[in-house]
Length: 72
Image (cartoon, rainbow, N blue to C red; front, top):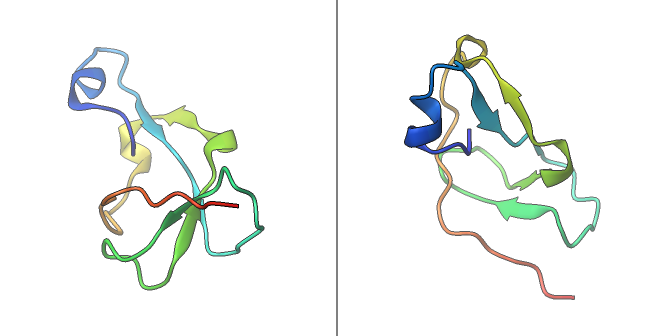
């Protein structure tokens, strides 16, 4: 979930999420997410940002830390 608490408090009952994958496709816009409770390095897929109902979130896998950008 990447939405802020202010957004989450709105009565629309949605949260904003960014899906993760463990496959490195080599795209510069895929943000590396390592550690933070995940069992292996993952990559955020910003092209698939979406809003979902909070009830679809079953349990927390981890929490995002600092962003590490790739330099190519």
